[in-house]
Length: 435
Image (cartoon, rainbow, N blue to C red):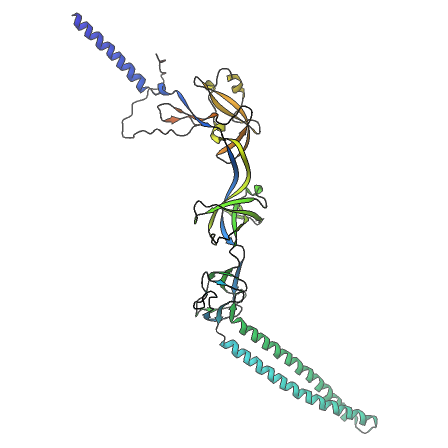
């Protein structure tokens, strides 16, 4: 009987211990002791930038067109390799022949104009002869009239013929000048059949083919697009209206292109264009950044990720932005400073001021007032007599064993297996104090 009682008592004790252990294991609140995540105050350099996207453009582009209509019969020879014709990427000099339009109709027009000029000159010779004859008859009539040896009717006829010959002579001279102008126009149009490069540069685009007919109207058709100098390039950056007020001339700029990952190019702001554009109610301004391209790596129309260097700080104390955003619960503040921390307003400090929190031991934290400087969106410059390099400041907290954090912290690195069964959580009960 005694043995039975002993066994019964032992089973009851073991059951109580097991139930208590299960209770403590299953109840989540027991593991909710805060674990603070900290980061060290670092000393380093801070660069504040304004981000934008843009396009790499040649500094000067010339659109070569045709001033007459006609059929393209051939392209010019490449100056670097006469066995080839000019094409995309060809380097051309000023005056290099780019293309030729069929000159046959313009040669015929020039011949017609020259023939008309010759005829006008011949007619002028006839008119000069008639004028000289009319002038002699007029002078003879003047002599006879002074002697009353000529009838007035005959005299009037001679005078009229003289004046008509003189007027016809002027008409003939004007006709010669007109035909000379027509010859010059015909020669000019014939010269337009040979299209030459107006500048030294590189052909970016060829927009015609041999056999294609170009028609010149009010707008000259574009045949070639030539970049004048690819050693100087521009980046046309689109800057949001919220940031345009912070952009200034000669501001240093750094940018990258996808064609060369990891390589940073530099330039300066040379122009801020005031003609804004609106796309889907978003207003942007075009800012021109000039950069050196002596290496030739930057190609026209690459997409650039631009960062305007607004300000820079050297050798300053830096903290993560999360450290300035995190705020403790009132119960976590050390009792000696709880009243002071309770009246402080970390969420809305005075202008230029901020509060960092450090561990005070025993699960409590205490504030450190700092002067807040520039921020690059990730780290912020801080200064003050109480902040030192290497100091550990709180950036968040997580619940031990729960895999969760407070809203001020980031997600815990712990993961849970979704295929394992979850134990039920007890609601409305508080865990007993640990023994």
